[in-house]
Length: 156
Image (cartoon, rainbow, N blue to C red):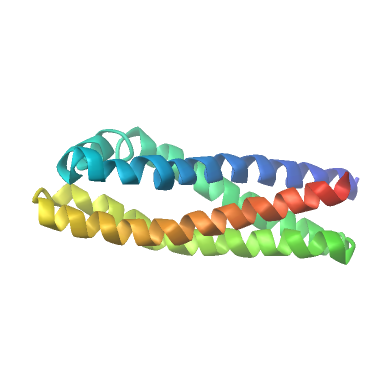
């Protein structure tokens, strides 16, 4: 029974982390660089209409669910006394999920602060700051997903 619960938790954490990783990379690779082409004011208008409207609920639910699933999976792994070769990447994944969440506590308020800004210079500074935080955040979620792929590879 414990084996089934752990595998279910692992698959849930992998799926949610994969979705979050995709959303994070979409932001970093596609969306943020677009501001250099369309301008920061147009990008801010898009962000306010998308990310800061419907996106708020989507990112919050996805981010919290993925982090909780990673932590719960690590707890199940610890409780089940699984072999070290499987435990290590599961514990690392949980650690990376926590690091991603810590970055989000900085990224979200930074991104939301654009609601009060309209001048180009201030928006440029804000998006440059957000991009730095987002880079670390994306790295942590990629590492998180990489750990789950590592575990799934070991289970094959």
